[in-house]
Image (cartoon, rainbow, N blue to C red; front, side):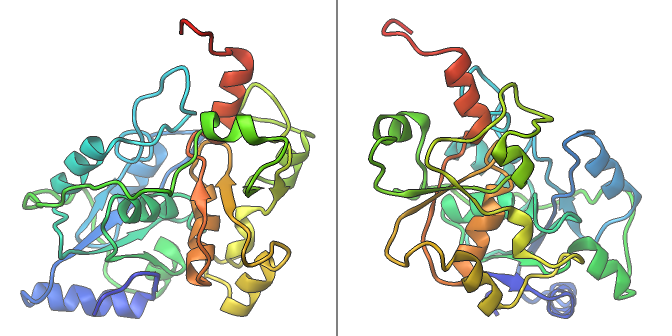
Length: 284
């Protein structure tokens, strides 16, 4: 069976059983991460993880190296992502399951990257690592190594990304609705714990990413997801952003589940700040 949205713990356990019997190809990615402590997610993975899972670091595997522009977690190139995906055994026919322990905050980034680069057989574990652990299923420790090299070749999908150069010239009359996924306090500019400037992109509205799941990290029912987006007309184009193009993917995931298309500004607010602080010149 091909999972492309949400996968339940019981369904993942069934896929694991099939894998053990030599039926099907399954790759599990542990995407746990902590923006305040970049090593905490990998440490948690080594302590305990879903059997067979490989660790996917936000800054090392799901992002490109930082530069002046591009935000705090720059979007990787197709070649960079191909190298990572193959290293964990992802091939064209592989079912990929991604999870974290923060309400899809980082798993959705992996989900979006895989789909953007042409791999549709990917699903997010509902409830994340906590739900799997609470189900009383076996856990593994250490590092799962020895993955066979996959043959996945990333191919960038067109019309899914917009950058500063696309957005800024049309701020006065934008053909889309910008949606900011950050907490409301950051959106309003009341506080800014990470980036050098507080506030939001002119014309944006606020749809915090946490609204996609309940307090335990389970996806909300489809009617609730539709209600969250009903203020934006169905035929309006949507461009999602956040602080660095990570939690915006949670909003993109919810839009995917209700059948609405949207684009991502991958550099997001951190890239916008860089352009304010360091404007490009003609010779740059």
